[in-house]
Amino acid sequence: MATQKVAKIGIKKESGYLYFVDKNGDISCAKMARGSKKGGKPKKVAKVGVKKKPGYLYFIDKNGDISSAKMVRGGKKRKATKRKATKKKAVKKKATKKKAVKRKATKKKAVRRPATKKKAVKKKATKKKAVKKKATKKKAAKRK
Image: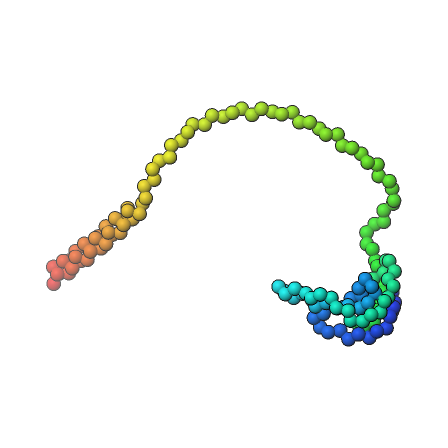
């Protein structure tokens, strides 16, 4: 890629800003977006008025001057051929009837809440613990 200096300006770049050659051929800069913060609107830095050629990329080089390079286009080259407009025929599908399936109505059963059972279970467990404690006390008293 051969680059070519178009105009010598010598602009000093600030960090956090994007410098570019705008549509008019002047140098502009805009604040770069970082994270959730949005970028700023472009400001004109220098009026140069470079006339751009199609097929060339214009940029600001390390020295702060405007340089240009020929654009590299990738991919395989295609031959220019005329395409004929072809109409696709609409294919009609036959409508099939679905058999209606009868379903029996199901009745919803009343659901009992198990919260009352849980409370009863807890009470039984505490009663059993109390009974076990009394039995161990009686056994200890007999041994003495």
